[in-house]
Amino acid sequence: MTTNAATPSPNFIRQIIAEDLKANKNNGRVVTRFPPEPNGYLHIGHAKSICLNFTLAAENQGVCHLRFDDTNPTKEEVEYVESIKEDVRWLGFDWGDKLFFASDYFEQLYQYAGHLIKDGKAYVCSLTPAEIRQYRGTLTEPGKDSPYRSRPVAENLDLFTRMRAGEFPDGAHVLRAKIDMASPNVNMRDPVLYRILKASHHRTGDQWCLYPMYDYAHPLSDAIEGITHSICTLEFEDHRPLYDWILDQLPVPGHPQQIEFARLNLSYTVMSKRKLLKLVNDSQVSGWDDPRMPTIAGMRRRGYPPAAIRHFCERIGVGRRENVVDLALLEYCVREDLNKHAPRVMAVLRPLKVTIINYPEDKVEELDAVNNPEDPAMGTRQVPFSRVLYIERDDFLEDPPKKFYRLAPGREVRLRYAYFIKCVEVVKDAATGEVVELKCTYDPETRGGYAPDGRQVKATLHWVSAAHTCPAEVRLYDRLLTKPDPEEDKDADFMAFVNPNSLEVLKSCRLEPGLAGAAPGSLYQFERQGYFCVDDKDSASGALVFNRTVTLKDPWAKIQKAGQK
Ligand code: ATP
Ligand code: MG
Image 1 (cartoon, rainbow, N blue to C red):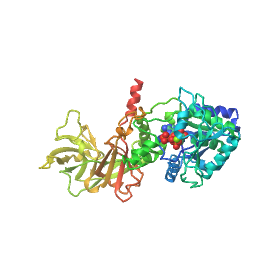
Image 2: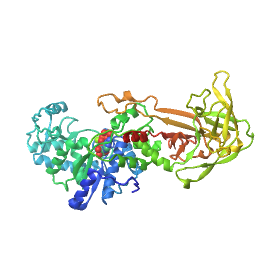
Image 3: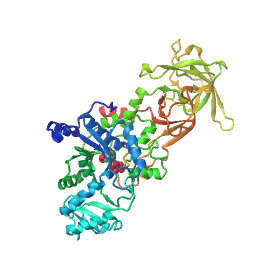
Image 4: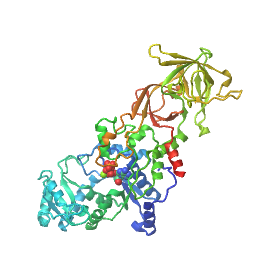
């Protein structure tokens, strides 16, 4: 495994496992699993679960299974299975030969159901779905027994066999566990175990028209695979009695322990796959891998390094209390990684032409530039300098306010790695009044960016030489949602919080010539602007497209400082 996350911090699940090992429970084995339903792409919340399950196994010389919980054929697709495998691998984890599908257990699960029926622990119920709901009662009122609850075993077996044979339409009957309609836990009020669904499954085709429910398939899949610690999110806490009940009734090879932890919630982010699918289907984003999506595929395309995501997951820890993690912390982890590894380059996103009037027409100098001041081993490169340059449009103001220290008429600034320049004339478009060019002079004595007479300037600008640039499109992203806690009100329509300005496309950017042919996925710091990644989808045609991975501003550092005061 390639994990290089921070030193493991103690958490309650690590403690449980350590104690189990000490007591030689499960003969000292640790087997965990990550059990996604292939009904969408994985998101950053899944990353927390993946890191947790794979890391716990690896720390204890155990194994972690990848198991697809594919029990709902109407929502599941092969595309999702493939994307999930790719995402887990990309995050740096390896399930070896432990790849499983709940659908591989359909026959075994069916046999177990027969066992329950024979023991009088399950019955075929012919109430309609609406009636079943009505009979279930509420949190404050007990449920009522179904009139089919006392069906004789032989009749249940016959009906169940015929359900499998396809004799009945969808919804005609279900198989229910016979537990307790008066239980204070509604999950124990004779939960449905099987439903008829005349739907093709992406793996079993039309072999089945009877599909197990998640709450039935999950504990049994865990037991069949010899899982020791079945780790899931807190909303399954109330399902644990059912998990245990099912395993207690059946001759299963083992009884895994279900342990719940608090799911990851991130500010400005929705995580339910249903909602993410809506964003895709409504064309609010370009797809599941749109760089604004909180999916692993989106984050990969945006340039988030897998190590940064793993580090983030380790940092947020594992607890039992629901909270909302600040998106700034994730961005901090990304920045921290890229600061060390991404080479710095100069890129002008909104070019403004600058002519150095006292620089010779045909001269080109190669100037030394540092690739990463954080890492001298990354060395230096040369960037060409000539008479006509581009600087960032935002770096000039004709009538600068007090705290604007960058270029202005009559003012001198430093060009990074180059010279001091001074603006001597502003050229405007006669019709629109827009500034189209600056005429400047340079001081040849300041080569490298320092004046021998010790005079100082207040700003250092990035630039590129006009005749030596590499053109590119750059996509700037802002938060996809405008509300800090979009899931606060569960009934609110989150689509109302979609940020209409989450994408800004800049088509005429000019980069250092060295970036021509940059490999898809490669990451750079554009000096003063942020970290950027070559888009691996849209750059293919030869034209470079960059995604802004993250800005340089670090709100997280500020938040932490404020917290220390
Ligand atoms: P969603 O509700 O986002 O659609 P899900 O829980 O239905 O997700 P599954 O495919 O069933 O998605 O999840 C696979 C595993 O990932 C489960 O063990 C689940 O508990 C875990 N998981 C899902 N969301 C989160 C989250 N936000 N934080 C931590 N773990 C999560
Ligand atoms: Mg689920």
